[in-house]
Image 1 (spheres, protein in one colour):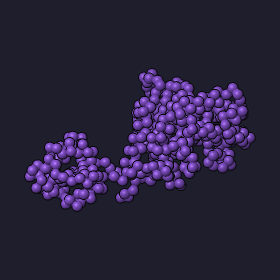
Image 2 (tube, protein in one colour):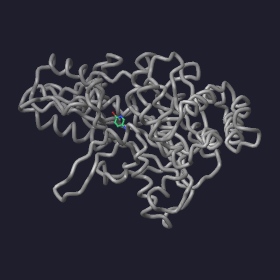
Image 3 (tube, rainbow, N blue to C red):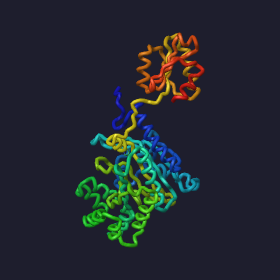
Image 4 (cartoon, rainbow, N blue to C red):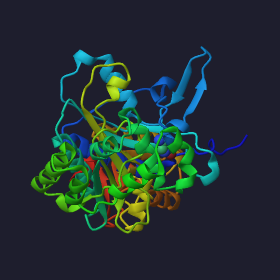
Length: 428
Ligand SMILES: Nc1ccc(Br)nc1
């Protein structure tokens, strides 16, 4: 039997789970601070949710198969389509605006050429039913709050912001039909990563001439919103939205985190407006998080139009960033509060009653189940990070006392059994 997990997947041992619980805890804390409600959906979805034919990596790397009922299904590569499906399913039953969050595990079947993972956890925050960029401003505020809470500053990380709507205005002026705008953005996003000639067939399929692509790329080099406005024209709705977003950022107090970057398009076909991504200013890492507006996704599922925007925040790059900044929490030990052990087998019952009493008072207790010598017990307390070691020994137990050692202060004394819970509660 191969003891390793399936290729591209990870086992989470206790020390790994402590880091994941820490990260999820910060994500949840911000989501709740911003009044978002948690939702979830099955990891297994109909493959049809992801068939978008826009050349996106996420749809070309589906972890898909046919189940025993001959259904075409897939492990979700992202959460947004599941959310859209849930909104559509309850269309008139949800109160707008919807502000929901989730911490799903998402999957891709990437050829292991680059030894990359095939699953990750991705914090999702979405707002449905708000047309204005106030929604994007609130989402960006949540991302900044998260970074700030874990010790990351705007000197470490920025949020690149752009508008696909501006690109759309330019594509229209260049004669690119609207039906091809999404796929063109996906292609342009790939241009950042692969050489132009590798995408020529995609460009030809979209009817994009070299000249069109060259013009698009030139506009994407605009160094300011004013420069973008010069390219798209003074009455651009997209430019107005960008300016409004930066005004709101000033009001929130996180404008120093934002960087206008006309080259950001993101790789998902369904974005229609503002797009953004978190980046590390040292340039060492891939995008930390990303998101944007996707007003047409519900229509693409056959539902009525409903404005929406959101972001995804994966669990991989952020850990690399925290490592680089020496901001990872110490997760070598857990947080068990007390270790209880019997000095000899005949005192095991007494030790069990001590552990039960402490647990009833809400304490976390690791009860040493087989009788162990004190040397092992104290070493184990150190391994577990236990604050108090409670040893039930014959002499003291004869007076209904328990030997307690505080592993932080070093205090060691015999405490009446009935006072033990209070003794610990006063010091924990
Ligand atoms: N979409 C997606 C899924 C899984 C991983 Br790992 N990365 C991206």
